[in-house]
Length: 199
Image (tube, rainbow, N blue to C red; front, side, top):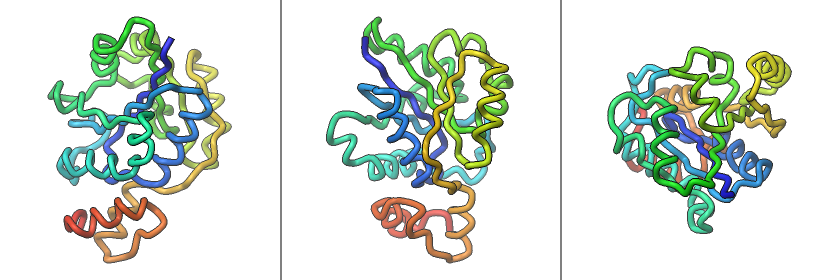
């Protein structure tokens, strides 16, 4: 059995909160591989202000360079190749076609996504296709997440360290000419400046 993590998001831009959470989840769940999947067209968030897929994917490559080099992580363009709105159920089913039958997929989501998981497109079918694992993005979320997951059933909540930062906050800082050092990896910050993104 091969255990594969799936971590999707707009990554607009990818930041230290994403990075720390997914690395810890990788270790905690004892996964063999982690797929980082930038969304193409998100069904959950407004796509206004979403920069080009290529830039978001490149920033993910820079953020996870060491893990990619070690063969543990991979940046996947599956949702761009599939086209249309990026519904997770379709992504997971496509991944199942691409990987061996003994692959088990662990879908990793943040607390912000967990709280309206029952509004996701075909969420019950999704629970049957993969293991859904949630991690808090704010310290205050954890106990509410455990309660919500218990009501939903079949969702595991990981107790990980939380790095409180959001992509929205970073975009605002960049727009206002403020520094973002310490919120994103140095290589990602360099790429944003070089390309003049979010200003």
